[in-house]
Image (cartoon, rainbow, N blue to C red):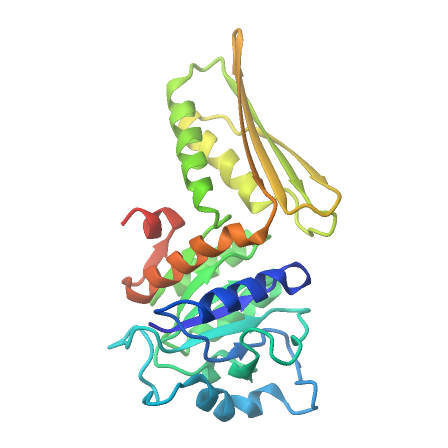
Length: 290
């Protein structure tokens, strides 16, 4: 199974977590790093795209055959890529995945058909989607703040490859969404709902993709779009609440993430899923409930 991870966590936290998780997995391996930032150069002044041959060599362990990875006649546990997104800086020597090397374009990622896991920025994701047309990769998209045009492009790309997009990769949130859907189906038309969205001070987009998703789940079952209140403060990761009330009663559902490590199991499950899935657009529920 080939995995390419394009991640841009706050202060590189998500990138390091995913690199360590892939490196520590029995069936995944880290092959290279992909920069989605235009004009990125390595610290030694060498253009990143010039390092593709060394990245491919460093990606393979002893006895690995070139090009053996990927989801087209794939060899489980071979090619994986950890990619830096816009604004990420190279990690210190010896950091997880550092030995895998850096490539500057998706076409230079080692492996026959790698899975690219993208947690970058809307700009980075747009570049990734444009470059995907010339490759056989599958995609896992966790970038927040995508526009309607970005989602249209994502759907177009999904016609030729497996693409999994999720607003939030917490596996617990899958159960939260299911509860919100069930509640909205069962309560009367006199019920209303609201979503509270709290993130760290530096988060760019508001409302968050998760808040929009929870509101859309309620609307899809109940017909009314809940109001969303967004707050950006402090240094915590995220907290989302759905409040729903009718005559004489109120339900409050709260989901809080204190560490980005909570997202890693869902991300890896998604990567394993799309590595073998047919072309199409999928959700995290597809990966967890198969």
